[in-house]
Image (cartoon, rainbow, N blue to C red; front, side):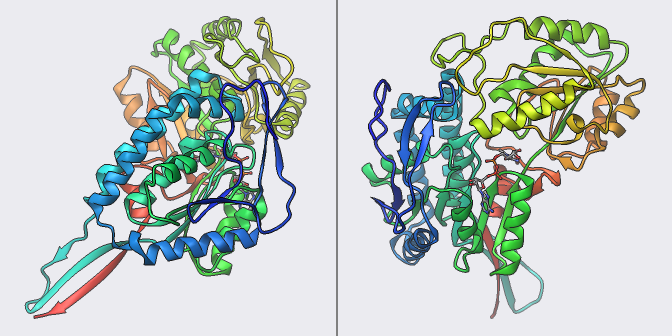
Length: 487
Ligand code: NAD
């Protein structure tokens, strides 16, 4: 299928196995991708099967035992730097593909691709610095540890930040000498396939080091159940994350990293800079149309600033430009990913409307794709559905205001999730109390949504196991061997 009217041709829509683009071994109907902003067809992409996963795992195993297994850290460092340079040279095309495939404003897609490039650069620096430790315990014995690659890694990602989430896993996995089978989300495979093409064109890694098998749950299941996959790093919902862990337990006990859902609290104290907090709360709740695992969706306001804050938020809501033209320089806000997500989010909104008041946007709304306007409910009870369930759409829930800061902290922790949290306050005591008591893996004070490859990223409770990014990601993708040698 050739789609007309696109700025860049979609060149690769097949599976990438052993450095070649190939059809699936099974006759599965290709997936038709629609542009979420317009609902119009974008491309037809091959979907893989469990036989294709077998092929990709064999290819990854051969690479591990072949030339790649002999590469030293400097070679891996240089390859990752070459990959980062190659992505930079193609940033316009990659950002465009991400924008039309995931329904992002082009400016946001640019940010995402640039962050992905930063991630490859960052982890290239680790590639030649992987080390173990030595121990001086008993005379006559020399004891030390060696950090080895985990092996064949299955990387399964969600649709919301397609290339960024893939790069958070690919970069540390490759820096530490693993081979990989990447399964992007079925809705958003285009940038992963474009990167595979660049890897192949520039001959960046030996054959079989990077494989991409597109498809949905059945491909993900085949990876997480595969007895020859040594490590599975997953980003997605808590529901599927639990299945991945169960698959590991039922098969080869492959190591598992889980980056899962969130219902993240935002606390604004009476001493906060309100104007700044309104701007940042807005971005926390509505960037990527709320399809962000770290989206700040439960807002706790001090009763002393409650009215003022809501009035300012209302003004902010009235100036959001959502348009089907994602390339428009002022486009701030895109659609949801697909009809399924649209219907799910609408359901949450309709049920909440029957019970709670909401702030309405007066800004003109885009029509034609899967757009839902930013929606703010206020005066909501802590145990309401919209205060407890992850919606993954543009819905901000303002809870009943708090009197004491300690009360706000205790209420913020009353959730099964523990991914991210935010606080706006100038009071060092409140900041210290927040950082000590909040039950979340990623925390921001007087800012939000700032992530860097050097900071570990991952949640507590039902939000996940293990970390992406940081030095911790090196640990996730390596295994430690201890060796004792007698003199
Ligand atoms: P999802 O769980 O439906 O799908 C994620 C991936 O898992 C996709 O590639 C999908 O094809 C695959 N999959 C589906 N069923 C599977 C199965 N049974 N076995 C193996 N793989 C399977 O999630 P989604 O809708 O793509 O993404 C939204 C979710 O991801 C939200 O809950 C969000 O919070 C979470 N998320 C978390 C982070 C994080 O870093 N913590 C980041 C982004 C998104």
